[in-house]
Image (cartoon, rainbow over all chains, first blue to last red):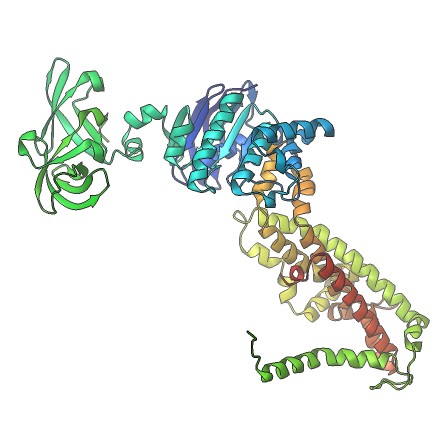
Length: 353
Length: 262
């Protein structure tokens, strides 16, 4: 039994500091939504508000048709997985998993059977009698996951569950978490600061900054069509170039940069293009060439770094400092004149800041 | 490969031990001396002076009072100190820094000053009976130890464990007893023992707060020495020492002494 989560214009304070500003978020039944952002962006605060460890200053939080806003944490019936596992050190693995069932008055025999079943699902049934101290990090996180899932919560929340594991295990565990979540169809909130992690396991990702959601979308949309400069920078669009539309012609426009470089853009790809806009590209989408006939943005090359697949250049242009990549076949050196050509397919268009 | 140890180092260590243990050995010897005055080395051997403790009613009474006060004061200090230490650690970020210092103040204030101020305020001022005054005084005396030791245990406790239990449906108070307390058990036991020993051995606070008819063992020992110089005093001291050693041995066996040293 999984339920949609609805957060409606929630504002929260720590003392006098405002940490969440009129935040609204709707998570559909069975969906996994990640809250992604740097530390202090309010993602953990949001999770703690839903869990009931913090009270919002205003706004409401609903799970299905139940109002959680003033409900004490222990009555909310939400499964939580913590960064540092938070297993009960004095209880065996089986007792840890059975703890939630015990609170629900499930008889001991039934409890042990269910706990063992859940441990089998995470592949740890053979460790049921151990104490948490005898487990590895990955095993601990599996026990924590089993403990949260066994109560069959309508909502599951993860607070940076993988950040204490090593890189290889992190990738394995996130696949495992996603599989279990899919199989159970449990509505889930996943807090992380790791972009790859969030994008790889989520149905949708909310990118947060300073207590606000900057954009909530599927990973694909976020990655290709950021809605604003913050999200664009966050997903790697390092170059933000201000442009003005010069002429419109049928389905396409010609726009120019401050120093006169011209670009042709098709409305088919970008939809409505405003008269003044910001062209966003990743370094991969801005090619360095020594051929002036390409009509690119004129630039003076700065530091060159080697990326393996390309060279990367720090460039000074009339449109500001840009980072662009050039082919391995023709390395250019510091101080050389070059032209930067945006790869239109890999660009995004933003409203001016 | 053997390590060469500087012989001066060995001599120095031996000297330290001599100074630490010497007085205790002398007391031990004196307590079994078959003489009517304190002397070392003992002359003859008798357990008469141990028997004599029970024959002197003042000793009997004060041993009982001391034990009562020690148990009650330690119990009270735990009841006040455990929640205080919990709050100080759980809300460390929200609480002002000086608040935890407040709980160690009774250690910083000279005990004799603490005793005198308690006499003025509780006994003379508020007119509390002597036993109550003693109990309050000892509770205040041992409370800092309880708060300190349990705080040390709680400082390594991960409070997200508590949150995990609450999220699984365990109400906060129940969680405290089933999850938090079992994980700081060692700290509670250490606090109990430290507080108990501090109370049993206290002189300076008790000196002010004892009165007609009610006294503690250390105060009675002092009173006895002022009038008599027989080995009874040595045998009482041995008794106190043995009691402390037994308690420490139990701690060492069950938890390890590092817990008290923390």
